[in-house]
Image (cartoon, rainbow, N blue to C red):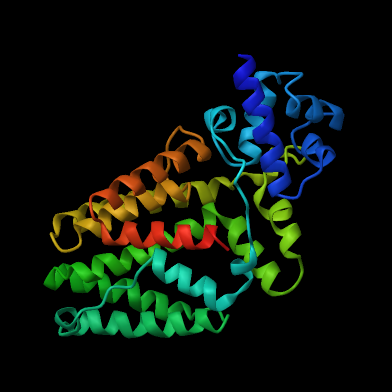
Amino acid sequence: MAEINCQFGKNIRYLRTAYGETQLELAIAVGLESPNTIANYEKGERSPKPDIRKKIALHYRITEDELSHSDFSAFHVSSSQLGDKEKMMEMTLLMFPIICTEKAMKDSLFQKGHEAHMRALDAMKEGRAFAESDYDTCVNAYSDSYDTSETPESVANLLWWFLISEMSVKNRWMIEGAKALNDKRVSNEAFFKSFYLKDYSINEEEDCLEDVEQNDLEELDQAIIELLKELKKDVQYSSLADYYTALRYVLGCVNNELTEAMNMAVGAEMMWAFTQLGNEYAMKFILQGIENSRK
């Protein structure tokens, strides 16, 4: 137990330092009255109660097992790319590739959907809201294309829209934080404290989704699962279906009874496994993650 507590305390210090937190800030965030308690945890002189241990892990969006057993001595964070619109769009398109082939473009419905998709993408690149009419055209044209011609690229691009919609709601902090960085409303140093780290000094109900949003998300979840099943049937894009399945876990977007941190840990293992199996989409994602970690 002493050895576990020692690593646990070291990890708190590593993570707290990486995110630029003081012991007082961490104490307040997890509902403790004194920074001395955090200091005692870090020195291995005191072990937290189970509820505090859980809050500290959730605060850093990791599992309790990771907090107790992993080594975060080399851990560091950077928000610089989140404030760069061009880099953010590059990362988005790497995570969510838009599929277009010569064969698919021969289908007039797919072509119609893709043209609207490109118009919406151009608006996003310029920092503008895309036209709802372009979104409607995409969804309707891609859906009709698959219904009439069974174009797998249409399913892939429908998933693009649905997955980004899901991520935008489940990871609202990322969208709002990126906007704040871009508008210079928050510094790179303050980004993680303001938008990423969970703060239990704030009423948790404020961080919950409204019931109507939750119902919408459940419907979206079912739609995504059905589209993934369809994409999985196609030999050419089966690997994209596998990658998107892992990505939903990595982003904490799946609907299940596990914590966000546990789902993210599961997703990371899935992504690595798919990389070892030669999944090109997973490999690009992992390589980008390695590149980002070096900056």
